[in-house]
Image (cartoon, rainbow, N blue to C red; front, side, top):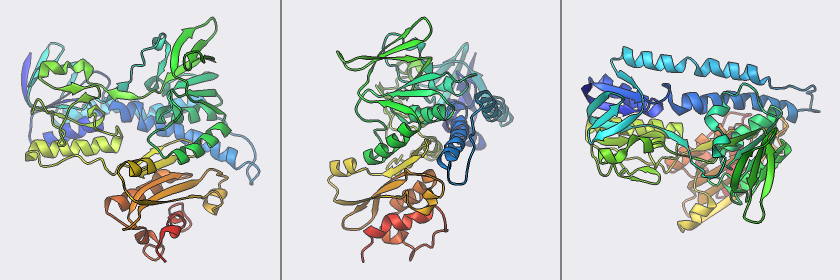
Length: 456
């Protein structure tokens, strides 16, 4: 059956949902489609369940860190009970999402969406004709292309394991592997991370990452560098993982091997060529207004946008830009210059703005100030040995260029620095004379971070 719409949205995550809702509120005829259960990555296979698991791991780590400081006795994670609790957040979402769409008059479709022309999307036996088509299809695990890849467990499935295996190998040294590794280690599993290169968490400041590596080792996580995956094999009682450079390969035993080696835009199954939609190896090629460069009827938002940092707040921002451009004639452009990010390990790390590496590449004259905050009572009081920072400021203007943090609550503190960078604040604007930060708090520690950089 063929049906006409103003907007067809592919994907029901935060980006797709926002676009569908806002366009429908203006009176447009809107349809939305998903090949999986409604809700998208963040709500079902990302941020929401991750925060539940990471919260449990944080409790275990806090108790461990406080042993001998007035706390005694051990705590343990009851994995089946934890996953059952996690499901109280995720299980209601698909039905609630779909009922909400239908209640608003948005037509819902289930199945794989494929372009059937520049202005057409086929879903099973239905053909949806639209003035605008928005691809918000999210991302999927990046194919690794090694023998035994099918024996690996996806990061999506890790959230819903009925039992946690004794030995887990995580392939890839990005934030997915590190966050899950800290959860699994806190729950009592023996954990190994295999990273193909000599550097993990490559988007973060290497000095901050080195401090996280020390904390990871103390948590019982074995991080193996320069270990590209060669194969995964099924043994008599367990899996065998072969990794390493040619002639230097090692074998690791595991009860489970988890794919944490990155994600790519999920646009291949859309048959973009049939819609005159140009792609590259990262996804659909878009302009700075998030519009396909080859088909003006197509917009891209969220993880399906190859230019995106693939973070939930960015997906929401993308959605607002797409809606405004559909309604207002392509007036808004995407800007990813100030995007704070965090890794929910124990302790967490967070970053925003330029790293030293990026500043040097751009020829920017900067001053870097790094320091240790483990002796501050805000951190020592909770037994946290791994706390510190690195700030980058412009040498002439003293404007904040970058901030890189490790320690308790840095996922919150980093937002202060994001605002500072976005609005061109100097280190003088962050002093006690400028703002009497709430005390005692980890945010107040900003005073100690900026003090050496303030002009006397």
